[in-house]
Amino acid sequence: MYWHPGEARDTVPGEFEPDHPDRVQSPYATSYLCHLKVLRRTECSSAVLRAFNYPPSRSPDVSRVTVSIDPHVHSDESYDGHEPVELILEHAAEIGLDAVVITDHDVIGESKRAAELAPEYGLIGIPGVEVSTAHGHLLAIGVERMPPRRRPYDETITWIHEHGGLAIVPHPFQRSRHGVRQRNIPVPKPDDNAVPVADGSLDSSAAAATDARAEADETDDAEAIDEVDAVETFNAWLFTGYRNRRARRFAATYDYPGVAASDAHRLKYVGRAFTEVAIEGRDSVADVTADDVLDAIRAGTTTVDGRRAPIRMAAKHYVGAAGRKSAYYARTGAVRSATAARRGVVETVSAARVAVIQGTHRAARILSWIT
Image 1: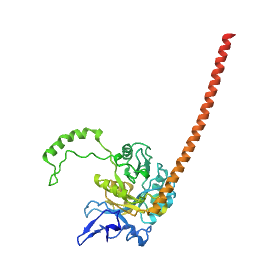
Image 2: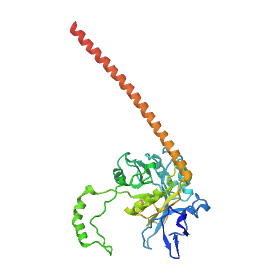
Image 3: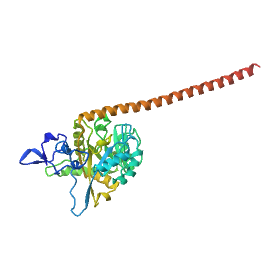
Image 4: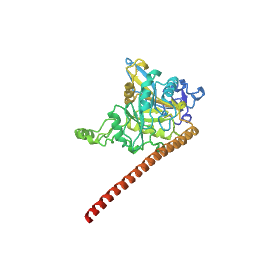
C-alpha cells in the first residue's frame, strides 16, 4: 500500500519507493483498523494515520502472536466518563481488540473489576489508572492499588515499578490536558565521555575515561534514574497531531517504546487508536497473560495505529470535559466549604463553652476570696 505524505501528515515515514520518491511505502499492506467494525470501509483509504515502532527480528523457530490493546480508556467511574465497564468490554470484543485497560482518573475500583470480568468477554484483563501527579498525568498499567496522588513525577514512576506496573506518559506535553512537561520526565543524562568515531566505536582515550568512571558511577545510587516504560506517541484526542509528532520524537530520542490509545470517554471512540503488541513464546492469543503484555511493552515490541478525532469532535470533547471537570471541582469545593463551615461553627461553640466554664470558675474563685 502506498500513500502520499500529504495524505497522512501525522504519519512516521516508512521506506521511500525508489521509482517514486514522492511516495512512502507502508511496512504493512493493509491496516488492521480496516478490519475493525468501528471503522467504515470508506475511511480506511485515507483517514488511517499510522506511526510505527519496528519490532526486533526473531528466530523463525520461536512462536509469536500479536495482540491489539487500547491501553487508555475511561469508564463512568471517571468524573468525565460515561459508560459502564461491562459495555466497554463487550464493545472492545466486538470490534476485534484483545484487551482494553480502564484508566479512570485517580480511581481504580472499576478498572480492577473490568480486569476480573475481561476473560468472560474473551479479553485479557489488565487493570490500570490515570494518576494525577504534581507535574501532570501518568498511566499506571498493571497495578492493583491506587498510586499516591500529587507526588512528583519521578516518585510516582518509582512507586508504579515497585508495584509491578508500567509507567506510561499519556498525551505528553499537552498542558491543556494535564500532560507532563518534557523537563519533568526523568531521562538519562547524556554520556559526555563517549566520543564516536567514523566506524561507530569510541575513541580509546574516551573509552578509557569511561572505564575509569564506571565503578564510581555504579556505586552512586543517587544518580540512578527510574525512567518511564513507554510514551503515548499517538493519542486520538489531539487537534493537529503536533503533540503526537513531538511525542514520537521524544520517544525516539530516548529509545522508549511507543503506544497508541483512544483515550476514549464514550463507547464509540474505544479502539479509535490502539497498540499492537508482539508476544513471543505463545501459540495463540488465548495463551497470552497480562504479564506477557506488560513484558512485551517493556521490550518495545509495539506498533501503534489509529486515527485522530475530527477537530469539531475534539473541540466538543474538550469543552464538555472542561465543563464536567469544573462542575466536579465546584461540587467538591462546595462540600469541603460546607464541612469547613460546620467545623468552624463547632469550634466556635466549643470555644464559647470553654470560655463560659473558665469565666464561671474564675468568678467562683474571686467570690471565695471575698467571703
